[in-house]
Length: 104
Image (cartoon, rainbow, N blue to C red; front, side, top):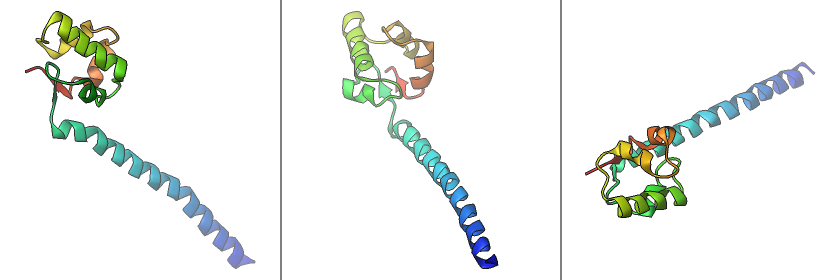
């Protein structure tokens, strides 16, 4: 009986630790995925395609299309901060993506 209780305690302790280890691995994978875009290269706002812009955090098809439309109608971006003039992009969104984009 004591061996059974001891075995159950060990299994319970392992069961509690497995999700914690899994969560740490997932966090590491997310970090590396988030930095892989940055490590590869910065996206030039004046030459980026919709597909490239969708790779930015928080940017979907509609925002990517709005960025391209703005660029076509107004002209090339002069600075990254000019993104806030695009419909649907505010300061909060800018802070998410500004480290991934550049204006050349």
